[in-house]
Length: 183
Image 1 (cartoon, rainbow, N blue to C red):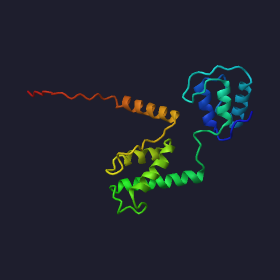
Image 2 (cartoon, rainbow, N blue to C red):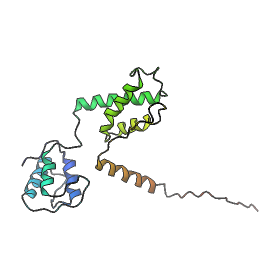
Image 3 (tube, rainbow, N blue to C red):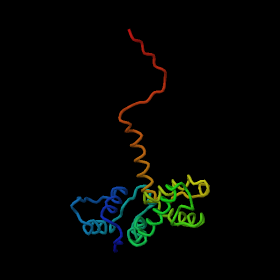
Image 4 (cartoon, rainbow, N blue to C red):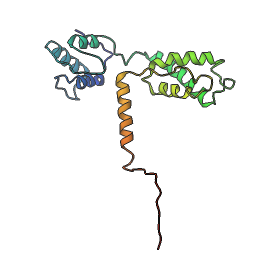
């Protein structure tokens, strides 16, 4: 079995930790060491716990590792094109949603087509921002421009949100009347 090269060392470590696989590794191990340990583990019977990758058994794990990493679906050239489209949309939004002053677009249909194309790459923060800003547009805001976010990124975003809510500098805000008396 050969593990697809698009899986990075960090991705493999996350997968090992998430699935609670019985692999002892060190952060000094390189990607080849990790892949060798994974291949060795896959020769045995393993139990896989519930996860957001929807991997249920050993065959599912083998299938996941032999296919291209779902997080790495864009080539460098494609990502640069997607990022340029995203910048154009953000500039349109920052420019007050005025199509006449926008140098990249001639009509709203082109903008809608571009946002529908880039929303499939919702793991990229700039794309999520463009989708959030375009919802404020008076002419396009009614469209379904919700970015598609992978389960692992969604989980990470929810964890960040929880930490932010908990980290209010230890302050508690109360809105009530306070009476001060001076002697």
